[in-house]
Image 1 (tube, rainbow, N blue to C red):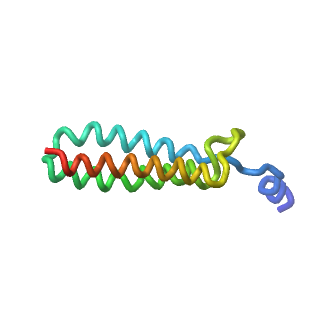
Image 2: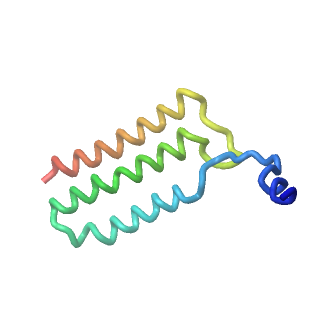
Length: 102
């Protein structure tokens, strides 16, 4: 039992984000690039809206929650929210242009 406690209480602090979130972003982009050309316009619009959800959640986790990368400097309190909101606005405006454009 003591050896188990030593493993879990090693004193290391966890910083940065998990590497699953960048993989989710890349996987979503690859999946969209393969699937979208074969869908009708309505199905493509629905797919893009659904795909925007994990992208925005991933951006939130990478920018707001723990920071950019392990060991790297973090953005300050207002700047991380500003970067996240600009990124989210760019994604949502791209989706809106896709819906509006003919």
